[in-house]
Amino acid sequence: MATDAPATAFRSISSVSETLLIPLYCRALESRTNNPIIRDPKAVEMTTELYREFARSDRRFLRDLAEGKLPYKLVVSMALRTRCFDRYVQDFLKRNPGGVIVNIGCGLDTRFSRVDNGTVEWYELDFPEVMEFKKRFFQETERYHFIASSALDPAWMDRLLEKRKRPFLFYAEGVFMYLKEAEVKALVLKLSTAFPGSELVCEVAGRFAVRMLQTAMGRRKFQRRFHLKEGVSFSSGIEKGDEMESWGHDIKFLDEWTYFDEPERKLGWLRLFKSFKTFRYAQWTVHYRLG
Image (cartoon, rainbow, N blue to C red; front, side, top):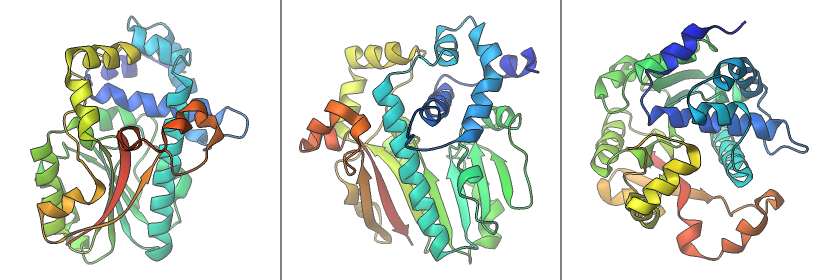
């Protein structure tokens, strides 16, 4: 039975970290549809447990989540992104079945439950208050580990250095756009130096989208749409997928994915923007080799 304690603990999570609930609920909502883009039983289980707490919350944001009030196109987009990252992880594990995966800014991600191959070693990384909340639904094992730390504190990498001879995949889903460009650059360069030969898959925002969200009107619209607190907005972006190569000679752009790369019927009229670069690269996913 749900209790009030976790809800109280959740109030300590920063406004930016509250965005971790949106993809969780999108996955749960999409999983309940006919012919879902992704199936995430764990997300359904988690949102079912959270319902009683969030339904009686004094935060409209949480009440709306409990009632499934999220824009349909957002649910579809999040499901497509989830499937994209699932495929990147699965491809890495086919090539490196005994590899190491680090989920940077994991939030309430459930990917391990969907793609575990029985041999991967997996690390979930996020702020201490997020990881404390996550322990309500997940338990660490010999292959599934929690790291309670800011991604920007390089000390968390020390725990992994003894394993760096193994293949590494770092991925950051819905994280980098909330960080400053200098912070993203420092993190990527540190990973490249500490884990040579590793791979990085990350979602990024286009600079045009960032500029739009940083205007007073764009920021208010973004926050109002999701009933988020002030201060939640994108902070950095890139112009094109291979831009990070200019950050260091040992960063190699491999490929990229956009929401328009698949003829998904559920996108509806949004598919009309496929040929418009500004919309195509408002948010997308890039894949690099580091070091």
